[in-house]
Image 1 (cartoon, rainbow, N blue to C red):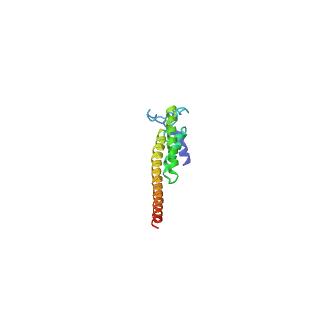
Image 2: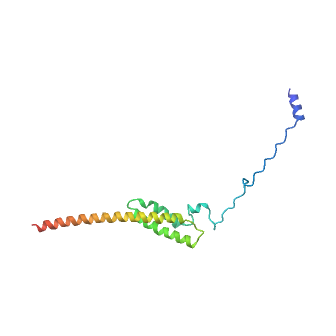
Image 3: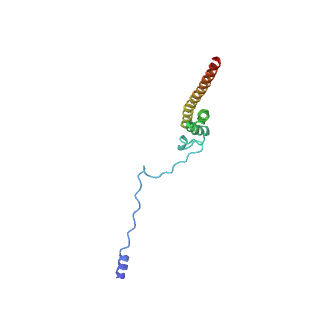
Length: 143
């Protein structure tokens, strides 16, 4: 039996596999050119590693909602966001406009919010102090 199988194998050699069909030009793999250091890459708009002030402004602006830290973080985010925009204007290759604007907007809004809260708190303290002063002053006059 094995002789028959060997004889058939010798008579009918296996057919060669056909070569793979060529890919259409739209699907052909082309090497992507790597961006040079001056050009930047696609992630620069989201994570501006070359624009540190814009990156810091975004982080500080988002975290300026934290009570007691919001006012100084918001002011710092505003300043760093403006520096990040200035850096982008001077060197257009350096991205980071969106994180700079996030820092400017969030930092400004939260800084104003916490400044208003601080002013209302101080107004309440001064009002309470003045009412206590008036009541003590009036009780001294009634004697």
